[in-house]
Image (cartoon, rainbow, N blue to C red; front, top):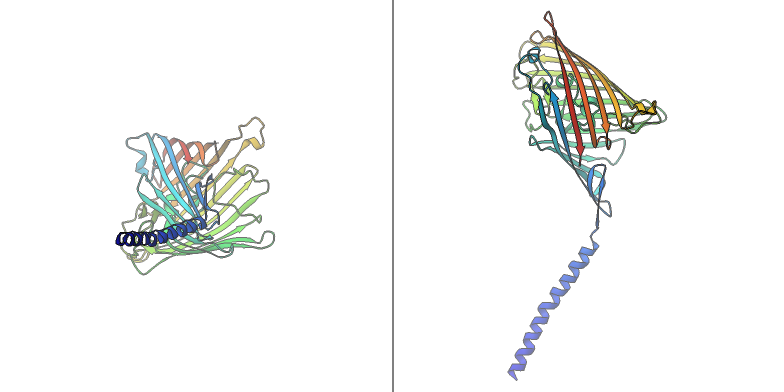
Length: 406
């Protein structure tokens, strides 16, 4: 009798343990079935993982640049750089990992970009883009001060930027920005960007003083069409698209220049102390694309005030213009993937310690296998640096580059 009772008790206990586990398993399976499924595809920004309800999107892409340069790769900076040993080079010039997408809602976007070859975190931003006329981004990004610099290195028309990029770029900064497009009727079409940043460059999370960098840009889309920050008319615009823009920046910091490496000093300027240099600069630029033809130009002014040395002031000037054309639009025998481009740039400092006037002429041939995602570029450049009262120095440079995004 007792044996039967024990057997019944054990079976009852087992049922009490198994039934809840079964219920939990069924509930877990039901919950899993209710989660949105994800699709995977390869798109314009690499591999894309997107939930079926479109609440979450993850895009992953890598980019590599293989470059050969002779007699060397680095642009001459000073008059003395034309002498010395020349060093031809083959190298991986860039190796980037890009990750972006949106989360929770399609208008809450994120993006970060990492330079693998130098272990640098280049960009990281969160964007709120619910309305076309008012958008917000916070983080670290390449400020939209100059079209030449703002265009990605993977979407340039030439292999590298011009000689004026080094003295005038604002490069990457950390801060917050309001931007948007004010589209009226016809040609009443404008974009704007307004930003406040720390003003100490990429990777620097501290400020040297109580001053911030302030930036503004107003862009008129003069044909009523937005022209993206991209080189070459790969779209072959059947209607003209062009912009005219004015940008301005003011900042006080130890730096007289910025680059991907962060803050630095121009030639003739000592390494700065906190709040030593007040830098004001302005840029007027234009760009145009139509039926395979593209052109862009910029004119720069920069004022550097040394606040620790009796407000000593220097002014710098620079310009560039650039043209490109897919000649198959006019010549039936011309290969469709082939584009030719030309550029002229000049830089005029008035600093006594560095009065070197710099001029660049460059030509390039692009062969697009798959747009900017897979292209081969050959570029030939001639540099002429003339130190006031001295003897001009000249140099030819040849570069071949394969840029591919995966």
